[in-house]
Length: 209
Image 1 (cartoon, rainbow, N blue to C red):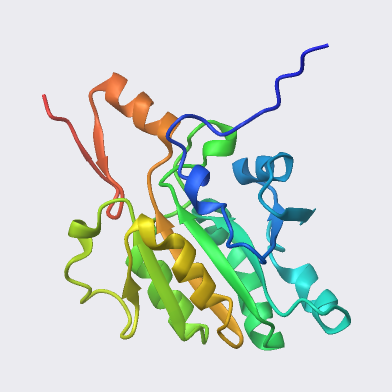
Image 2 (image 1 turned 120 degrees about the vertical axis):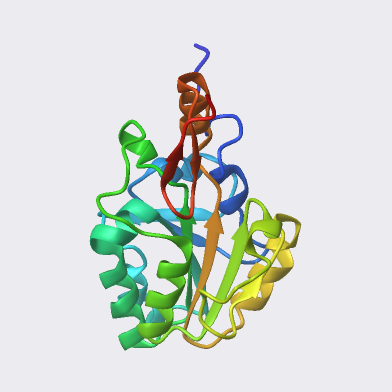
């Protein structure tokens, strides 16, 4: 019988953010991006919410693989994922956390994140936790021309640079972070239908009417 495998929505930021360079692999976890396991994107295994990348702490000494990527959404990052990153920093493993700031808990219906959070706050928290290499890949680079609210040394990249950027990050010793900012496609459609626009980095609701 014909089977229809679940896939990302049209315009979903995961379509770009979950891709890894040739020769690399990624770890899966709970969230919309779990569906990447059914795609040809070198992503395998999974763990519970809040333990993103933590299995790699135990696996890394027993494999020839030097580095892995793992995906993490902003909602999970806020309530528990930051602890997983802290554990990876403490263990000094080679891993890149790709944190998607999609401005919605998309997996369960587009609810807002539990608390107030922003792209710059995530970057500042990551630097405070000891992550030295932080890269930002936003939906609109023009909105981030001035990086005064970000930690020193953060780099700004266009989405077209994802592959070479990830190749660079996989050679970094220890933990590195790539913050990918793009609003959930389904949530964008809901907001347009309601006549609302939400500036993603500040959570300010504006009614154009």
